[in-house]
Amino acid sequence: MSRPGKGPKADLGTEITASLVVFLVALPLCIGVAVASGVPAELGIISGVIGGLVVGAVRGSTLQVSGPAAGLAALVAETVGEHGVAMLGVIVLCSGILQIVLGLVRLGRMFQAISLAVVQGMLAGIGLPLMFSQAYPMADSKAPGTPIENMAGIPGLVADILTDRQAMIATLLGVVTIVLSFVWKKVPGPAKKIPAALVAVGIGIGVAALPGVDVKTLQVGNLLASVQVPGAEQFAGLADTAIITSILTFTVIASAESLFTAAAVDRMHSGPRTRYNTELIAQGAGNTVAGVLGALPITAVVARSSANVQAGAKTRLSRTLHGLWLLAFAMLLPQVLALIPISVLAGVLVHSGWKLFGPAEFPKMWRQDRGEFAVMTLTTLVIVATALLEGVLIGLAAGIVLAALRMSQTVIRQHVEDDTAKVVMAGNATFLRLPKVIEALEAAAASGKPRIRLDLTGVTHLDHACRSQIEEFTAQQRGSGLRVELLMPGPASAQATPDPTAQQTPVRPPPPTHTSTPTRTHTHTSTPTPTAAFAPSADLGPDGPDLGTGSSSGPGPGAEWFYLDTRPLPDDYAGAPRS
Image 1 (cartoon, helix red, strand yellow):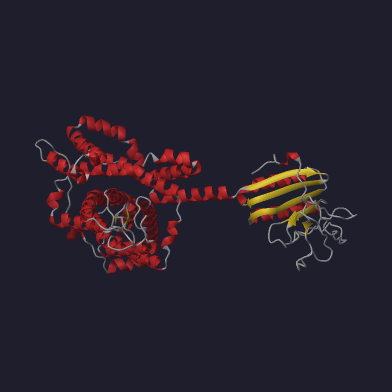
Image 2 (cartoon, one colour; image 1 turned 180 degrees about the vertical axis):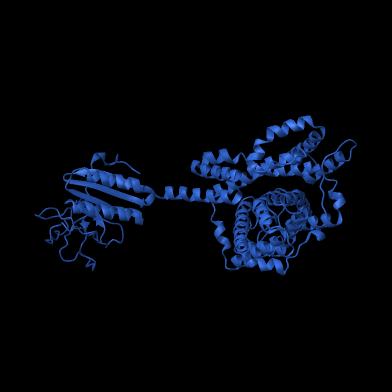
């Protein structure tokens, strides 16, 4: 794996062909996202150009490609409907400035703490809706809307294709594009170095030019005429609370999507890793420029980034050049773009969606870790049902809960010996295991024994909920007349909770007896067994505990000594319940 900041040597030919592939993927996405956002298609292309030339030139990420993203389309449409297209520029501009500030204060790296299952679930959650949404443009049709609606409408779409000759031709072009994308690398000879997408575009242009063929092609207007620089009237809108709320919302969502995507893209290649703070600054710079031009907000986009990686790109050159191709073709050669069938570009996107979805990853994750499989599947389903950010957040929450459950392994063992009900706990005692803790405590109280010993010295972590429950139980049982010994975790010299019902006659243990076998340690007293507890500071060796340490934290006046009972547990101890 390459070290961060030291990328592999660029192959100019590969970088150029990769940039052309990314351009072919980015072009329909830029137009589609703009249309879905309720703004002119040209604004989407402008944002794509900025994503390449501005964001792509900064050394934040090597292979990640930025531009207008479908994840923000619904939010943009809502904002435009409420405040107008002119106000969008101010919101995007201020969001970009905030992103730069967040990068400068180094908050970008916190997005590295993301589970692999969440990343793979995010990729699948993006890829699956992308395939279904692009199935409609492949047939020169319009997608119904949400991913669920798109999936439900597939049977009707198939019926329409079978009854419409032109739709069938367009669909066949898309299918040919998909097939070429899968098999073109297996073609012998130097021809396989030509990107499959370029071959498919060439075939599509040739078919579209045939007599009697009437498939839809790309239509791009004047980019310069679509630029809307915000004026004083728009900046005055910053006094509106709703505008401020929109700015904060755009900032959080755009930053999260970009950096979560960076984590996903880093797993696709072995090149230099993303510099998260630098990348956040780069995204902010891109959105600042996009805001000045009144264009769509920019985020990193998985579909374009994935296409860039799959095309063999190794440096930032390919992602920067793709912005140049967008600008050149849209401004200088719009008539060339008008020859490209939309169904061919949709086929390119369907192939990208399949690679993102990665169906083989699900059974692989099932075999490796079923808990992580559940997190991965949940993330995918929530993204499909709602949106990218919501799905990732819920996936992260599920991953945290899974980690907490696995870390909170508490061993609770119970047995009754003579007149004492004993509860021994070890491991991490957190609120997640509180029901088991309460069950063990209640069982000890219900044993009917006059004495209860709670040994928590083996607990490595005791959270506030469990500690409070145990202390409340101890106080209640002592209040009802039972004698309770409570050995709490902590430093070796820590005192256990004294029992106010204990007899107040100090009793010192006899000197340790040297034997060839481990010595059982007991409380030596002619009075009833003391219940005020003090945990000795020495190790329990074969000669018993050494109390001659002179520890200043010994028992105070009125306290009684006791030894930690290390006698072998009864035979049924090993079968005690574990939580």
